[in-house]
Length: 147
Image 1 (cartoon, rainbow, N blue to C red):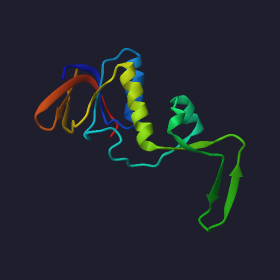
Image 2 (image 1 turned 45 degrees about the horizontal axis):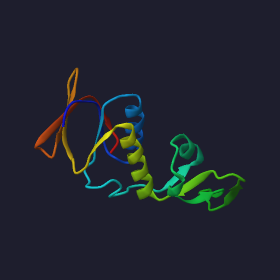
Image 3 (image 1 turned 90 degrees about the horizontal axis):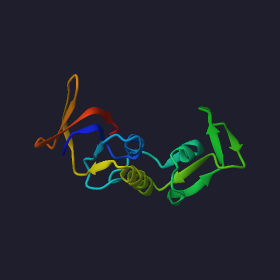
């Protein structure tokens, strides 16, 4: 692997969105993901707000369901129900969502390196050097931890 402008650790939705935006601005971006595939081990739910879906231009094929209402519970157990005519959130297929975000980043020019577990990060005044699996290194001008 060669020198990059930005190294991103983690190929989840946040890492991929950052990679997409940076690559679209012309930066040379590498995304380092410890797993063999994107979305291998998901660690959070698949509920995203409408604003997020619109801002990130989420592919509608990732949507499993729209949420137009919610129940808000107080500690005492009482609740209120909020209903809206328009969807306020979407339940997404997280695997499809993460992979879709990664595809968009790759289409913008970001490079993905799967099975690349970061074992060390060294930061100096003018570069970042990341060691992968204690056997190879990659360098860049900046690092974003999105793991």
